[in-house]
Image (spheres, protein in one colour):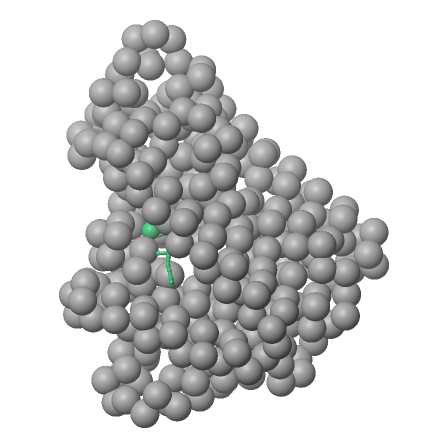
Length: 298
Ligand code: FPP
Ligand code: MG
């Protein structure tokens, strides 16, 4: 029923009655629609469910439009990003338009759904700000990293699961925990892919995060394992454009200390916990979507 969500988003966009926005929307790569899939899997496909899924995907698309401006990212899902094609101003405004329309439509669902989703948007905005601020420092605190990815990414996935549970009359808290774990694991894998994928697969250069100043989980773990000279060297490379040999050094140290495996294991544990929790609620069908979060191209 994902196509119903796609049609609903198209309808919301065409309601705006603006040719430029409709044309820009066609340039937006869709992605996997994981949040919509999650909502439909939990709550079926009634009109309110489809609308909620469409709204969440519009908010998510808006956040990525802004994120690509913030991150100076010129590709998204292997295609040129909107900021690359039309500049930052257009990307920001298209984000604002999709976000506001989503919010407008949210008012037509229910106050409870509205509250869950709008609170997540506050969190994801706070999380993105934290991501930007942290990238100006060499953060080595895992808890700070986890809090940031919870806000930036997991909050909207948690809200998707929670809103779907409310719509389906299922226990909200358990589904929110499931969504939270999925979201944390999803961002951990995203951060791993920045290291393991080549630029062609990921649509952005490898180690882009570290160059941008982001010390994601693998860098935190790597720093813990390095000797003093290694620690000094890693620190000196932070937030700089890396030469080929510096990139190779980081990758080699990660390999030697099994950093990718360690980080992947942490994401996998969150996923296993989420699957177990849903199994206790008789929701075996929700394990597939959990696995999809971590089984991405390495
Ligand atoms: C991707 O992170 C970014 C997010 C998941 C959230 C971004 C949120 C905002 C810009 C706030 C938006 C606010 C409103 C009101 C819509 P990433 O850069 O680590 O992931 P990437 O690899 O996909 O770029
Ligand atoms: Mg980004």
